[in-house]
Length: 95
Image (cartoon, rainbow, N blue to C red):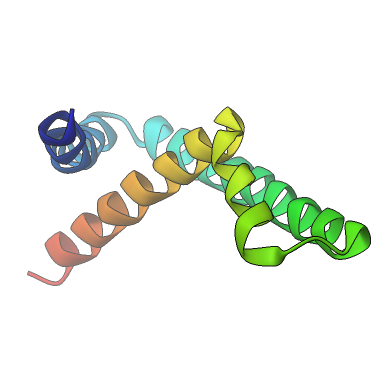
């Protein structure tokens, strides 16, 4: 499973890069998904921390429950892949 995650972390940004070179519409779509992911990711993180503060629970153990939220994991994964994709674009533009 770890190998699959590593391969996906490398291959998805490369595929995204080639797709956006074929059509600029995909670059806009990737950016819109990234903005939505960042908003969702931030909302989930902030509401989870807020709830922990309101409940006065032990922060270090309660915050790890956020990793059980599939939306948090999916948006975080997309943001990670998107950052590598944008770094790839930046690297190619600086050549």
